Image (cartoon, helix red, strand yellow):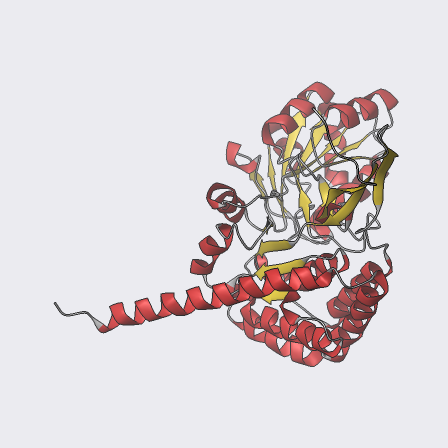
Length: 434
């Protein structure tokens, strides 16, 4: 039997990938154990140095990023997520410094008591161990994940996409330089190969990884949830609604809707669907005026909204179909649906929401409180833009993701959410009888 050259090459590639993964995952597990010897001052100093180095190595990082950008269509919604520039590097450095200045959570005593038999119990916060983060097209996540994991005493396995392969490689090189200079095992941050065939072995590495966190498209998140044998915290896609009630202040509503949609369209907290009380239909052209005139937002409107906007909206206008609701656009597109009131708005959100971020604009206290109490989402807003669903904005320094599930963590996840706890029991020779 003749074995083809391509078969031999495929076998060699698979063996090489297996060796890479085995070495990297073992290294991460060993590094996680060594991080327990670092104190809060140690991790803070490293993150401050990394913030300085991220700016100092800017041209190296931007050159790598340009290579990634050259492979992507600028019209792709992921292009903006992939893009690095000097301003974004400065913002990354500021986030690193913010994380360095936050209290390190590990070691915090959550509960303590003495039992009648004299045993002294402490419930103490501890690192999770090794955390794998799987993400797409966002090289800033490489910095964020490392900073949050390192400050909370965890090693991280970073599985980026091929879209950002050069950017992530350059970033991890800078991280490793700073760790080595501090005498810390660089395997505390291990960058897995960007190829798709590296993902399944990571998701089944039960002896090496304690937790997986996917960040990206619905398809990526579904794949991780369905194939992982390790625990997963799901960071869901953001299908975001803002309901403008009949009681709303219209100037405030226009400002909130514009900001939620146009501030940065490629992020998960960007507005996708405007729900409008039918009494406000005459005001709709005014509500969307800036989105059309300044940003050229593409609007998909139901019949009532379309009839009002036709001839009075500066941007592209289309009739909405069922597919335009419950869609995360990640671009300068927006759907508009007219509702009879709060009950219909709540029902629409229940049916279409991804439980990420939802907002109401209203002056009625009853409407506001019902919305905040009844909407099932990680973050619910009254009279504010959903653009604030962000770890840094919430005072967390940065975030490792926004959890849309309900176990362990929900909403922006930062340092405390990357810990578990253990019971520490001190005795004086007690033994249990019976």
